[in-house]
Image 1 (cartoon, rainbow, N blue to C red):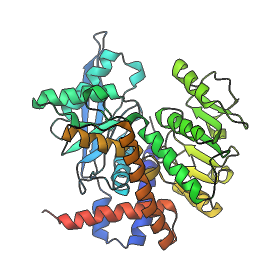
Image 2 (image 1 turned 180 degrees about the vertical axis):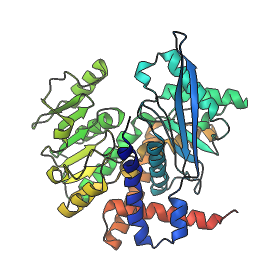
Image 3 (image 1 turned 45 degrees about the horizontal axis):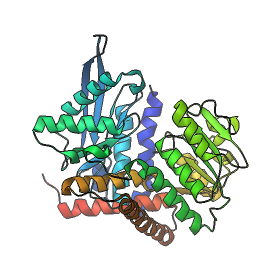
Image 4 (image 1 turned 90 degrees about the vertical axis):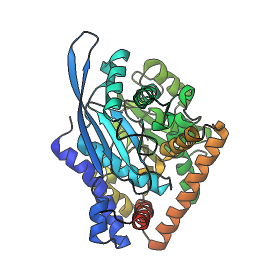
Length: 419
């Protein structure tokens, strides 16, 4: 489990970034109070029976942070370290992530304190269905739309959708996104987050006069996001000098064989034992000599302790909250550009929006259309962020939060206060 100090700081970091942008927007105290409190936090027990007959009880969470711009939107995390603070912080981030790419959603997040790796397929299905059943009254296409996150899969989303549909006696594919294609999923959804990371990175590299061909890239995290982004960087001519997963990292200054690494990870379910480069730690990967660093694993890996040793010119946050405010300040002082998480990894929620829209219309798009629309959304909003950054002389992160907060506040004021 996360320590109490760590729990407090996760949400604390998110609030710190919010406050910096809110100061520049001159938000009044009342509006700030509303925006720094979640609309709804739900905690409940999930009793279930193991295959052995033993009874266990997990804890489930769902935080619906904001409904100002539409239904809550955010993933469901199955992990033994899930806490209310973590879920609240992630729901808070989702509020700004949806707003910064101008989606008609608010922010939400959920989780279950379990280790899915230790559950059989039957046990995992029972946990998922009980979790979904507990939330039937508060989720739905016009209320709250969950999606996959750490430890959850398209299959889990299919079970969630089926459970919800059975309870309300109506086929409702739009209750969740990230589903398999066979039950209303969208083409391009699996690759969307990694694709968004690569699209925003390549756009910023162009802005900085960096040529992809030969640019050295290091990626921490080799799951769905990291591996797909890595492949797309390689496809554009970048030299991938470092990769890692939970088992450790690998470095090759001449460039790693990305296709071989992906094939190895798929076959062995991790990079452990991969021989394509020099073995390094995850901490060492963050300090490699490179042009672009992509932390695409967990939060709070770039801190005051290692920020001064980062050698990249550009940091792209593939993960949620990988950079602490202290590290962010050091990067700003050193002239290191950071593409913030609320933009860099917004490809997933953007294509989730496309999936939700397709489900509601019963009409599905070609993958090329999905990818073109994703690129348009990210490039359009990244351009607005750069404009705010330039006009207000602030880093990209602050500009992104300013744009997102302004959009949410305008929606709140237009709707008015119901009391």
